[in-house]
Amino acid sequence: MKSFFKGIGVFVLLVALHYSVRPLLGTRISVDFLVIAVLLAAVHVRPGVAALIGFGTGLIADSLTPLSFGAGALALSAMGSAASWLKAAVFGDNRVLQAIFFAAGKLAFDIVYLVAERRLGLGDLLVQLFVWSPLSALATGLAGVLVVFVFRISMESRP
Amino acid sequence: MARATRSGTRVDKVVLAACLVASLLALVLPASARQSVAGDIRETFVGPLIALQVQAERARGAFVARDISAARLDSLVLRNAELRDMELENVRLRALLGLGARLRTGFVAAEALHRPELGDAHTVLVTAGARAGVVERSAVVAPEGLIGTVIGVEQESSIALLWTHPEFRVSAMSADGRVFGIIGPHLGRGAGRFLLELQGVAFRDSLAAGTEIRSSGLGSVFPRGIPIGTVVSDITTPGGYARTYLVRPVVMPADVTVVMVLLPATANLESAWKAPAADSLQRAIGRAADSLARAARRDTVPGDSTRRRP
Image (tube, rainbow over all chains, first blue to last red):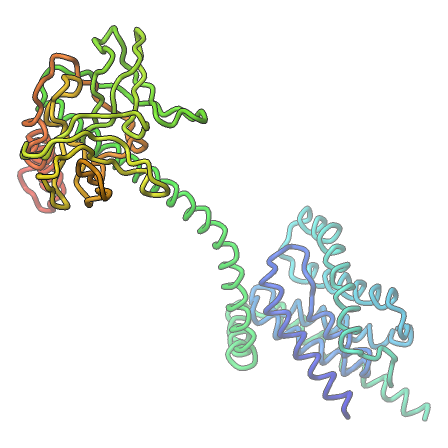
């Protein structure tokens, strides 16, 4: 029960960081705290619940970008559910594999989100997917490992 | 157990499918409906997050604006410092023009170039020489009063000895011509080094603090009536044969960049420094500035029908 409340606290904190630290940095290469929050939750819940968490979080994010409303929910639902299904392969205390896990989640989110929102032209889409998204994924992976380390979050999967 | 797991997996798939379908529906909703749903979510759950984002954006804006503001402030401070210098120079030049207008003839205007070499703090290079009529022992003055005397003359320039030199002397008197003495630098320490001494004043004569001291014209080196300073206090030593007064100079040579070299024909200058406040040139400049300001005001008065007509 204690770890449950701790998990909720970390989740809320990460959502808050997403709307406070990210705008403060204001760079194109940014840490996606929402992705980290959903991935951390997904490791500890069933895929359906992970999809719901991703959907809710995505709707919150989408409410601030009404033109692409639904894209974030779609991407986070799919990513959260997939992460929950793949949690057997989430590798305990191996920091490198954890970083890859967070980075891959961010990359997957970006791909689904950018394709679903249909806002960017082909050139811009390719630049975003092959330049900025990988760099942001790298930053998100490192930040995810830092969060796990700082809050001593267990990455062992639970049913 | 296996059935429960299979059932759970099926539920997960259904929930995932529902989420994906709902997301896709949100994506294809009409713009107005999307706006409405997004607005409802913003007003219910997302309010605190929006507040956080607004604060963060403001903080970032402040960071970015700080550098720009600092650069602007630096430029303003620099310009302000330059303006202050220009203002002082302008005032000095106006005073010099006024003095020139009162003297009418018998002087050469020149620049005084302070020389940075060590050991040469008591002389300045004056940009007027023999070709302009300057001769040795010509008095060098500023609008406020005496600065020094010419000790070397070239064709285009000359060297002036400042009153700070230990051997500088000038015959002086009180402004009313009642008390006479010899002015020389006060060879004190610290701030006192920038004062003068009125030496050799007869014991029967006394001067009150604030008395104006001018050149007396005796000795024919300095014309009569050039302001030198004001009496600060009596510093007569016990057992002396004459009184000595400490005098605050009217002009500090280091502040002067433009000077006038008085030609030998000049004899009595008392009237030139009599009433500097009533300087006619300054008044003329003031009048011109006032009329310009009035004209500018007239031009900017709205509804001035006379100016709208061709």
